[in-house]
Length: 430
Ligand code: NAD
Image (cartoon, rainbow, N blue to C red; front, side):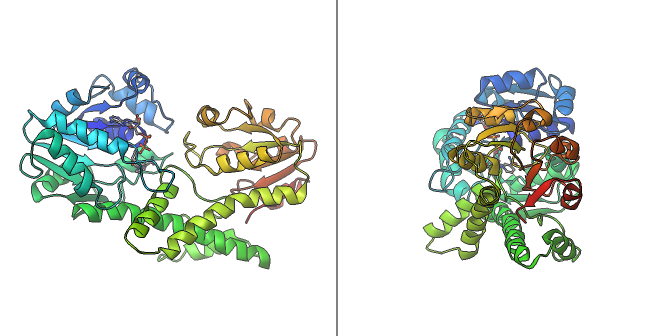
């Protein structure tokens, strides 16, 4: 099929590249010219394993990028809206990009025959009916259902494994305005994917996305809470999690205690659901606690650091700036809060991350960006590990070369017992 993806970020670019790889003709649209240029040169503007290779394979053949949204919509049968929906200061999602994209899609549909619009961005329940459809109708002069189709198709990819997840999803959710819209999307997916496809109405599909992410966030805060209790009893929470995870009703995933969740989705989707609940006159006590536990978890690193040394004028190494390994994404990364707090404590920070330093430097120019783990640890008083990159798993020798080999491990990246045997002062927050 001929497909347009509007917004060529983590979701839109990966979706576009994967559809192209499956043999579809794809036009990726973005407002940022430099992103579009890079994509057309076969260079991914984001770091994702396999993406550069897949992009190079398809660009110029089945995939092109453009800033011309109208051209993309007019030359395709389906448009996937994949623009960002970041948090506003009050926790609600910022709908400016969605509104603009809907308006531009609407304008492009004016002289066009039937076209399917698919909302892939995460939007709180009701957004497609209350904002996206009215905007498209207003600017196209057409009616949803009769003149254009509309579906909500939430994205569940994990950054770091985005292409793999897109090509091998656990399930596909199709929220449909009407049967015709749903049938088109169902047929596209049915031909290419062998997984359960659930068809719902629009707002149910929107809610499935939020409920899923809120549940994953809950699992992480749950294990962090258990971890805080375990610490008082001298119990290893990772062993507890292993024991719990063997129960198929629980599963082993998202039970790693540590500095808490970050990223562009879990915190944002949690805050948006809390706000939506408030707007609906409901107090979501569980979701409030999930968020509160997560915020406190990050600060535990600072508490431990303060308990072991006077931080004033000390040099602290931060290993890991990305919110998780495998990505250059630093949105809502615990490292942001922790670095800020350490700077307030008058520390000098030396940071190293294999992929995320360029993005971090855009928001923080006050720290030194090292070119290797060794460089980051040189003359440092304390090492804090915040992202469990494989590159950080076997760095005992490097830590031992510190003047005082001392680590706070925020993600169980090292083997604590081994570290201590080797003479490293090892602290963890779980
Ligand atoms: P992103 O910020 O990486 O990408 C969004 C892109 O849209 C940017 O490149 C931006 O320049 C572009 N854009 C903004 N307005 C535009 C417009 N009017 N026309 C064309 N392009 C425009 O965001 P993302 O991480 O890809 O997330 C996109 C959506 O998908 C969000 O709603 C997010 O919550 C959701 N989502 C993200 C993930 C993830 O892991 N990143 C996973 C599932 C769902």
